[in-house]
Image 1 (cartoon, chains in turn red, purple):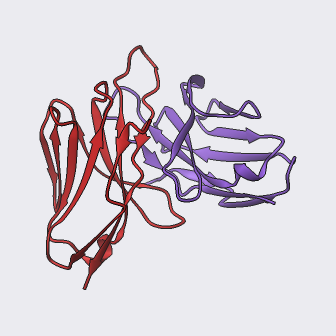
Image 2 (image 1 turned 30 degrees about the vertical axis):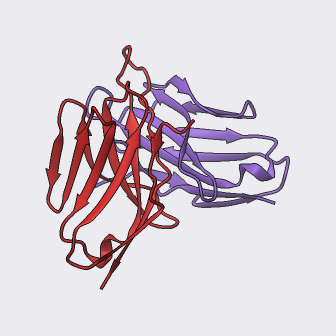
Length: 117
Length: 113
């Protein structure tokens, strides 16, 4: 059972427009959510994160929204640029339950974003 | 800024051989995670270490083992390799107790023939 889901495998947007990538989760224990960008043959690059106590976090062109009641988060990229074309992964983790306990990331299946010039 | 270093970047092994993957975390990061990404799949958690102690295990085969050393670098040892072990192996590091923003290395692409 996939706990983090990205239902859109691909998304194409025009340069300068808004890109909206969506992510749903089922595990109510998740308290931290992250977005990563990945190019082929490279490691995921951290983009932006949000704690479950917030509903919005903004960093430059990137904004993440969290709707806890719907167990849904989204990443907005405005304005989109051709260099944003990559696979975007949503990830989530549970809180640290004891000192030193792991907070491994559970990933969605990714969305391939293509920004057209 | 220093990033996570992984070596080797590419590795080709035959079935039943062994492989060792190395990960050097970002300086002052005390926690290391290993993930495996198969073709067309999302990264899956394998194992993690905090302060040189194993902190959790995910879907890691018994044929695999790992450790973290006093300088915080980590090694993933894989034995009796199978064709299905062909994948990208990522290491990520983070400082425990802060935001769980894990920084990933470039990965090791393991091909088992």
